[in-house]
Length: 68
Image (tube, rainbow, N blue to C red; front, side, top):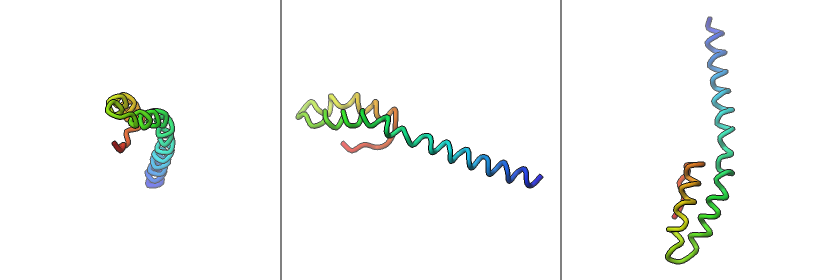
């Protein structure tokens, strides 16, 4: 019975590791949104306002903090 519990724990740990590795690509998918946002923020006065939708897009795909 103890071997079965150990096997279940190892299986769960491997499943979590594989799951976390599969989520690392989200930053690549959000990159175009972030690059576009950075380009828009260069425009004086209206840049930050125009970049808000692309920032929101990137944060939905990959919720990492961005610098303003």
